[in-house]
Image 1 (spheres, rainbow, N blue to C red):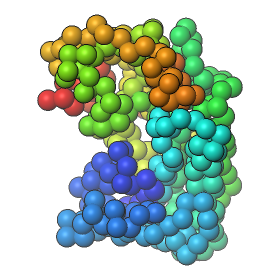
Image 2 (cartoon, rainbow, N blue to C red):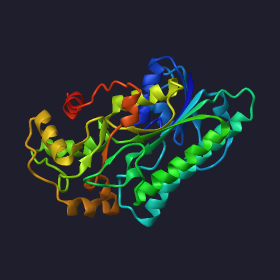
Image 3 (tube, helix red, strand yellow):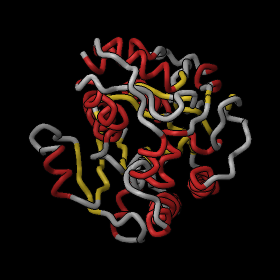
Image 4 (cartoon, rainbow, N blue to C red):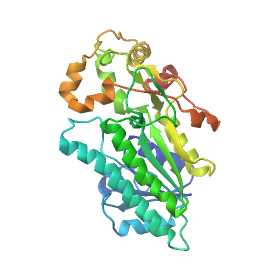
Amino acid sequence: MKVAITGATGFVGNLLVRRLHGESHKIVVLTRNTALAQKVFPSGAFPNLEIVSYTPNASGSWQSVIASCDGVVNLAGEPIGEGRWTPERKQEILNSRKLGTQKIVEAITNAKTNANSKTSVLINASAIGYYGTSETATFEETSLSGKDFLAQVCQTWEAEAKKVKDAGVRLVILRFGIVLGNGGVLGKMIPPFKLFAGGPIGSGRQWFSWIHVDDLVSLIVQALTKPEIEDVYNATAPNPVKMADLSQTLGQVMNRPSWLPVPAFAIEALLGDGAIVVLEGQKVIPKRILETGFEYKYPNLQSALTQILN
């Protein structure tokens, strides 16, 4: 296949590019920062990769490259768990997903007016924030959406992606759980544990629905290559845990104590409204993914953390 990818230099996108390249697919990296992309994906090591400059929230000549691509993977969006949620920051978070997806769909739709267009599938990221937060509920793909800011962002994000179906293009929306790997949330939790100062964040009772980055990349590749996969899937591991269990398991794998909790007020002082990402959670089950027969490489937290840390 030939696949266009936004967010390719990010945590998940980087590994996805390497997986697709290793399987001899051709790749078009749509990026705001061509210098960074050229550094991350040097031409000598990635001969089947093309780097195209694009503006996520604006139409442009970059859209013409879509017609030659079999599929598009849209991973772009402003980070949610970094910095305080000022009104301006919340607007950036929303617009980066709404407008970015809008312009990708516009490019695909325009491409489909060309009889030679090859584009047949859009894989669009979303997040389990779609469901809102709860300590007691269990969420599957058919569960109702929440009412908070993140839920509203996900609803808007997905609504823009669904417009691609009007062009006769297969759509797969993957609602990402918290992605575990060398970076992301774990990158922020590991240093205190190394200093024997690790522990659960907040009450420890909040649910932590996670997925190993390798399994997430495999899910994206499967969604690209299997035409029977369509609509919405929870991209999480089948065994969510409570924050206290995450902390205890991380301590065991690192051979460090996990008794020193990080108080909620400290996280709230640092992140403001954004603290909801780590202080509240949701128990999410990947029912539809399990029904496809997908085999998780890391279905349990212990094996996932052991692989990442060792």
